[in-house]
Length: 94
Image (cartoon, helix red, strand yellow):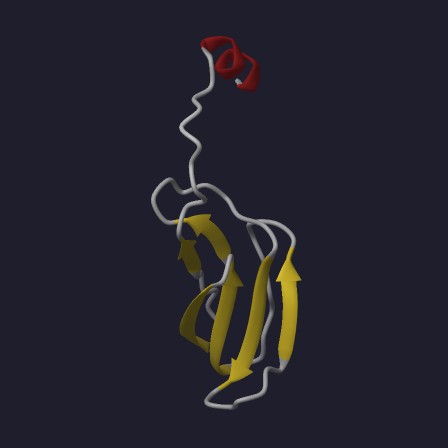
């Protein structure tokens, strides 16, 4: 799983994840992803994954089999204060 902002593609952390088997109402696993990527190994089956960030929920259904699956969750960008990095700051970041 990868967590990003929808418009700018910036990485997100602290995304709450809940994984459900098929159409069950109770999650089999809940956690907070501390970084922009979360790797999991699951048994074969059908799952629903809910990801919550900043009060926004995204859900996806995944059929897990022997092949790796990649899921990208896009969330609204954080409000921007309009301040841009100076050329000096951009150089330091490189």
